[in-house]
Length: 177
Image (cartoon, rainbow, N blue to C red):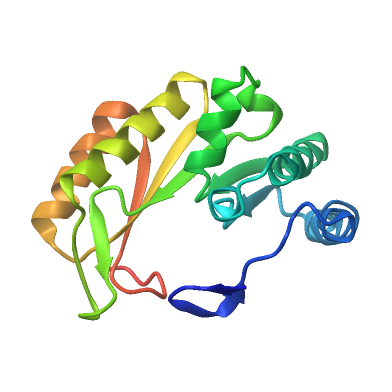
């Protein structure tokens, strides 16, 4: 299925055995053999999109396999999955070292083609999520889309207070503002 706003991306069913094997037996080992010490697992929100026990279990298996390879694993877009994993009593360090959350303070106005501040309820939700992840021992990174100096200052202050790191991207290609 297509991934809204990202024409070159597609959702995949991570519960398909061949897909899991590709990630854990081919792709990740090939990347790590090049000397890379960390893996950024993007689009973990597949569980939000395709919510089922099979997808939850497959995502858990994939992440555990990556951690078992000795890689530093950072989950992006996995708020629904990580929250449920923690609610089920899962050991967060068995699946990841960090979470990255995009657009906690910022938002993308897809129709207007610009950046803006996130809605207060969205910010509160994502702040609660990343703070919970941190309380469970995970490193936290924020990826914000903004060039607004005042908003960047708020993001910087929040991250400094909580021991998080952030990057403010000036465009969707992640250029500095």
